[in-house]
Image 1 (cartoon, one colour):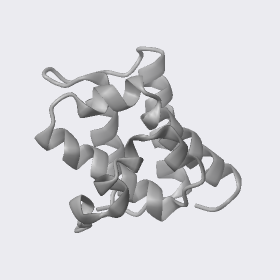
Image 2 (cartoon, helix red, strand yellow; image 1 turned 135 degrees about the vertical axis):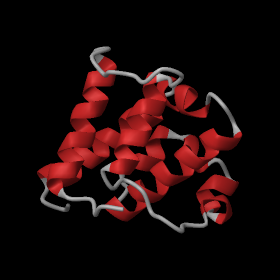
Image 3 (cartoon, helix red, strand yellow; image 1 turned 45 degrees about the vertical axis):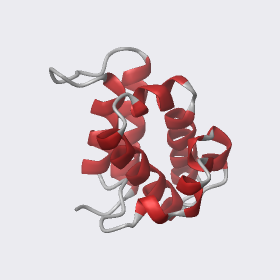
Length: 120
C-alpha cells in the first residue's frame, strides 16, 4: 500500500472533482462514489489493518457526519476512508449515501487543506 503523499493527495482531490463534474470514468458495476473511494485507497488514503468496526466514531456513527472530517488530520482521514470503504462491503450503497450527504466532499476538502498547509 503506498504512502499518502502530496502528489497522491492531489490525485485523490482531482479524482473527486472529476466525480463532481461527471468526468470520472467509472468501471462497469461500480457507482461513481465507489470508483472514487477505491481509487483513493489505491493512492494511500487507507490505514491497512485498522480495526475500523471497533473505532468509536464508527460505533457512534459520528464518522457519517461531514463535520467530523473538517478538523481531521491525515491519519484520521485515512481511518475515515478505510471505515467508509469497509462499510460499503457490508452495506451496499453506503458510499453513494456518504457522497449525497457531503461526507466524501468533506474528506476531500480537508485533504486538500492539509496539502495546502504542507501537513502532508
